[in-house]
Amino acid sequence: MDAVLAFPPYFPALHGFLTELRASPLARGPAVVRRWLPSILKFSSEGVELALPPLVEMFQRPETRLGAIDLFDGIAAWLGRRATQKMLLRPVMQMHESQDEEVMLKLLEVSDRQEGWAGESACDGRVIVGGRCKCGGWMLGMT
Image (cartoon, rainbow, N blue to C red):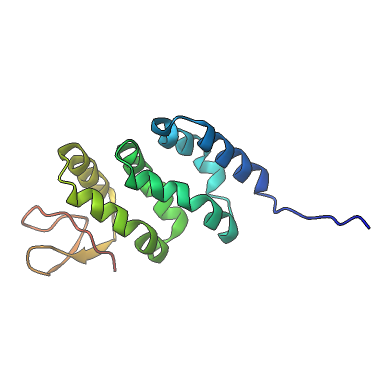
C-alpha cells in the first residue's frame, strides 16, 4: 500500500532555508536569513517551530549577533510580541550584559526603531516607550 505524506505548502522554502543556512559559514547566517526572510514570514506556526532555533542561536553567538540584531524587526513581527519576548528577550539581554560597545550601539538602534513597545526602565521602574528612559538606559522589558 502506498502512503502519501502531504507536506505543507511552505515546506520547500523551509527546507531550502535550513539547507542553505546549515551549508553556509556561520558568519554568513544573518545574510542567509535576510535573503529568505520574505519566505520565512509566510510559514505557519509549525514552520516557525522548525525555523526558530537556528535564528535564536544567531542572537547568542558572538560571530552572528551583530547581523542578527539587524533582523530583529522582521523576526519580531513574524513572532508577535509574546513569542518575541519568550524566545528573544533572554538572548537580547545576554547581548546587553556583554557590555560589547558595538553590540550596545546596535541594540540602541533597534530600540529606537521600536514604536509602541513599552517596558520598565532599569533606573527607576518608570514605564517607558520607544526604547530609552530619561537616563539613557536601554529598555529590555516588553509588556
